[in-house]
Image (tube, rainbow, N blue to C red; front, side, top):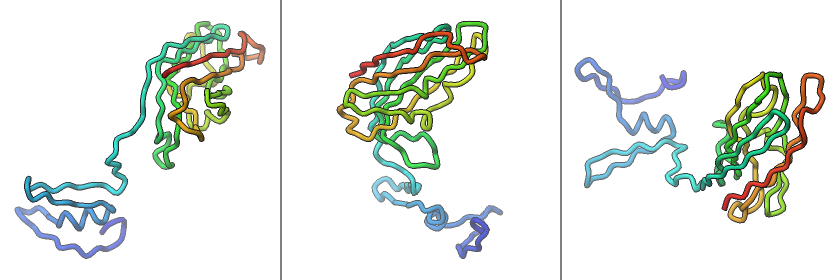
Length: 190
């Protein structure tokens, strides 16, 4: 039985162990089997195997900013033509910021860096980063840190992207009162 469907496959019992042909089983999963006569090796490839490694390029940066007691550090920028933000959805072209966001106060503060407005040096503006980003926004209890990625989906030519400008609204307290200023950052990386 494979996925609750009966399959006809030759099964052999050797030393009380069931054996089935490699080609038959791999085929059920949509994969492929190749044999190299020179090395006498079989190679199994899954249906979603990508023989071309990611063409992503990463750049170390050190950009910091603050809005009141909230601090953000961007330490790496990755330009990825096939960023996989969800295993069930197709990859996207993206500029990905590795960030550390910290509440340096003892108070509960709300801040939303992933909901900022981002502009590339190419003129493209991105306002939907939250959808593709990890949880580095929201409520922060006192003296807490969130680390993760803010992924900016890019529709234009990634090779031309050399800088990201970001504008993040001020952090605010539980009474929705600002506790800092709006933050504007430039992140050059190539």
